[in-house]
Length: 119
Image (cartoon, rainbow, N blue to C red; front, side, top):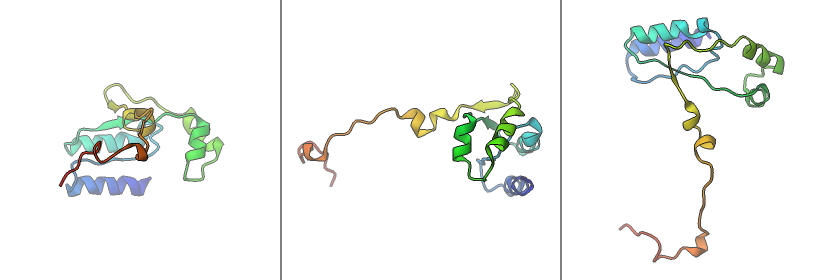
């Protein structure tokens, strides 16, 4: 986590990017308060995105070999984002949440007359 914080601050200080993501388990306010404040001081608009899922889903998707108990512990101490922090609803960005169903024609049913041809 310390390496991630240092790299993030270095990226802000370098000024090469106008948009940065700090992706971490920010389960407590103190976990991200330093990053939030630093971003604000550097002139960035800071947004918080909270991804919510049940512990079983988190356990199945975790790539850090955390035990189910570890994940339950993280969830039990989770601190809600303060109201003065701007929050984003990321569900609209997730494909499975935004695209419910796609209907496609069979390829054999489409003729060249049906297709738009660009030359």
